[in-house]
Image 1 (cartoon, helix red, strand yellow):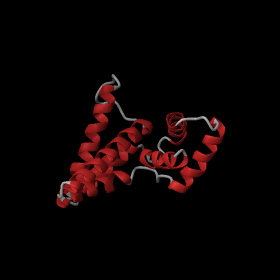
Image 2 (cartoon, rainbow, N blue to C red; image 1 turned 30 degrees about the vertical axis):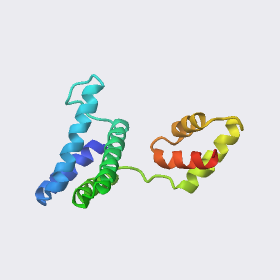
Image 3 (cartoon, rainbow, N blue to C red; image 1 turned 45 degrees about the horizontal axis):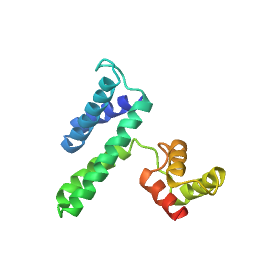
Image 4 (cartoon, rainbow, N blue to C red; image 1 turned 60 degrees about the horizontal axis):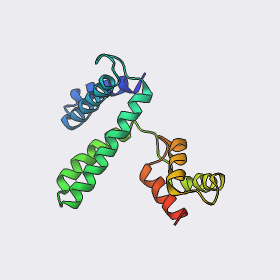
Amino acid sequence: MTLQEQMKENMKAAMKEKNMAAVTTYRGLMSAMTNAVVAAGKAPDTAVDDAMAMEVLTKEAKKRKDSIQQYTDAGRPELAEDEQAELAIIEKFLPEMMSKDEIKTIAEAKVADLGADANKGQVMGALMAELKGKADGGDVKAVVDELLA
């Protein structure tokens, strides 16, 4: 069963449970997937493969995290809670991200491979290519900043 099919099944279950927050989240995800398919130049009813679904889920999770931060900074915790609930649903489908310690081990090896004269951009580019979908970009940046400071 593909990720898109799993989401459709979960949306049906949420409808039966009358969990409208989850239904709204799943509908938004399905819409984002349809938009991604159309942006790729395919028909809107084309099935989404798991790779594209992961890209959409990652992008949607990042949007929720940004919204949570903005709502928290603006003193609107009730709105941040709604975004947190949506993020929890999205994260069920995402693989577990690497810890900073795991990232640091890989980053140290990558810096050694690239040489002492490597700049942050080179290290970030190499790491993000290797860790795509496995590590949060913000965590990778923090580790690289720490290593090359």
